[in-house]
Length: 464
View 1 (tube, helix red, strand yellow):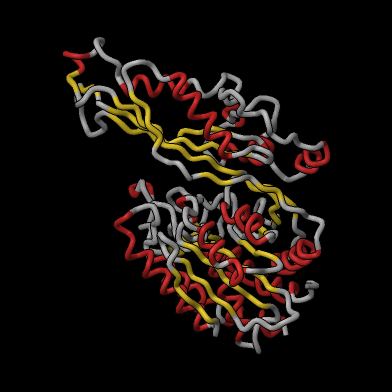
View 2 (cartoon, helix red, strand yellow; view 1 turned 180 degrees about the vertical axis):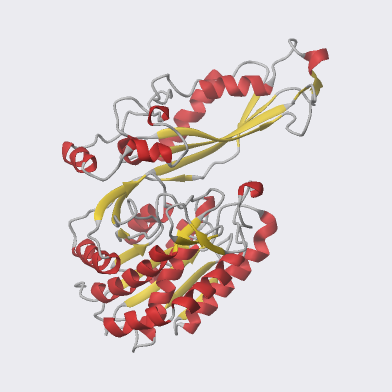
């Protein structure tokens, strides 16, 4: 049967790509209120495609952007797979850095000489979601999936899955599964497919400092009052030591240490700091991070604190000699196993309040933008089957990796449903996720679709 399924996928390659373009044209930017109607349109479009795959698909309210839930007819005794993905995308700005409009999908050559589709959401996560939808369609065209499938595709992943935990708790009986399958990660490198087993957690904060009641002339008032922008940058600079470590009391207290076995395994991966830096138009000696750790260790297994945005004062063309009445910063902290996001959030806020000078008022505007770090077991039957599927789909054996990113649902599903997640992603490190000129190599798109189809077949052998 799998040969017939794969033959259908091969025959539908052109049609599949055109449908992916339709998906990508919808500007489903979850963080912007003026895109609300696009979010609803995207959810309905996706539900319609799942209905074409002969699944019972519904667009369901969450308290924020809607979720798409779809199922086949569940047969007793079969394993149940929960497929999770998201249809929302990051804002495309800065628009001037795109080589083609972000919501006009374009096929062109990459620097590596391969063909790719360029658009916002191409790989994160619409393209990878579409790999699975195509795989489901191919199975359904040949008598139906050999497993019970439940699809949960949300519209708020890029804003921290703010309503997802409540949605999962309210619908936990409908979402019950034996394994969760997620494709929101990627290959370790071109030609090196991977299974992810670890994700960093997240604390995201926005700090605002308010000073005088209104903007002031810097000649008339400079030197007489506290400048919120000056205070903010001094405060932010205090968050790091010169060796790259984070200067927040208690930040490292519960960090899980890497085992010698993991460090040894990661040293054997085909990673080259010089090539890593070159891809970023940097030199090897420009790489920077916490002392005593390799680049991979810093990204996968060490916590971080990064400024993601700064606002305040005048930022238009030309000069305006003004002291702004306020300044703000967006800051993200990536966490590793054993760190408690709520404790880290409290420690960050205490450090900011303790270090803020007189003459400014401090407020924090994001309370619930947090997610737990997680490590999943790799010595399970489901992981073995996923490894076999990847080897067939990509023609290369899979390696095991962690990732520096965060997928909030993984911890939620483990806590609420007691289900582990398979992280089987198809993107490449140079896909420019969250950046201008995001892409998805077509070879990865097609091989990912085949891998998804093979994996659904193999998961049918799971004992339940």
